[in-house]
Image (tube, rainbow, N blue to C red; front, side, top):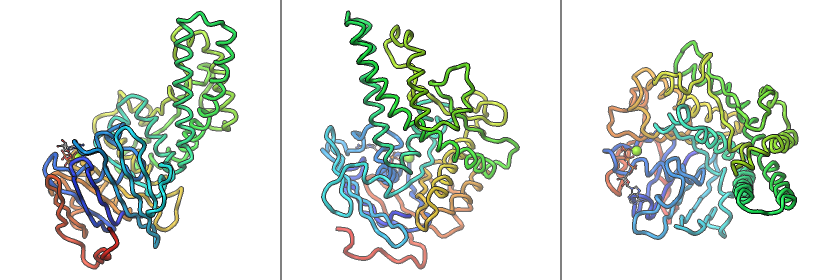
Length: 401
Ligand SMILES: Nc1ncnc2c1ncn2[C@@H]1O[C@H](COP(=O)(O)OP(=O)(O)OP(=O)(O)O)[C@@H](O)[C@H]1O
Ligand SMILES: [Mg+2]
């Protein structure tokens, strides 16, 4: 798939932007802070309804404006879809597909797929477990948008259960009624949690070999990448490798048993101590964990392999023509050594559309510069398309009102 048109109104630095895009490689070039990432962020937002940079939508709306509009046209094989989003500060966003009546936001998920590489990906390897949980959940959700419901049910039930545990510490509420209410939340949390865990485990099975393959391609090194699910609900005495064979029903039972096991500690501390919100994905390189052990270069290669592996998983999940996700490489080449730049550049060119941001042309690897590509010069609040590759038809007139 590829995005053939993007328009923005009051999005980040752009009061108004109208940008036709083409298949193949497009490079956004301009000095620091001019708005290169803002453009690709809008495209990624339209795919996942969340930004790779910020947790809330508020910073996406231009300072002083009340709402932002992102309109994107996606081409998949011969099929076109227009997605339009109105991002409202403090109110629900408005979403339209092909200019029809507004729909729920999650219905727009899955129309466009993106995989974004950015320097922040180092936190996937070095950072807190929350980054890895979000990585798994976002990837799983982009392929199975129904997971949005399980994730929000889980977050809601977790908040309620934590509030109950906290209030029980201070109140003289009768123990029996507390137990009865807790049992209700246990049940709800376990149901949503089992769905989330089940999706993560299934994804990990597909992801591990692809991430390892990507790592081998990027490094030619002797080390292999391993991904293992570390599950807070498993009795510490039990081997968590068995989880691989668990059904969603088994995971539900596992969570209920875990609540029984940690009941006393949870009551003392007033928070939920087991469940997918406390789990992690342990990344290993050879025999050692990547976190805390990997060198700087190995950390970079692992982070890139996680993203490239995600792209491979998408492609395996939907091998149909035009289904491969758009690849976005935000400011990554400047950070890599020459060898890895070349390798990454060669590998990413298999995508139907690749969008790259770079502060200066020299940051681009030769493998990219030598191939036909379009350059978009970015200056504050505006963009200028500098050259279109030969043979690419200009966008039809009148399509984008
Ligand atoms: N909501 C907003 N309203 C107005 N300006 C904003 C908003 N959000 C971010 N900016 C401005 O956008 C600029 C950053 O844009 P962006 O991150 O796209 O830069 P960049 O070209 O990718 O730079 P770099 O090369 O450093 O990565 C900053 O100057 C910031 O102040
Ligand atoms: Mg940037």
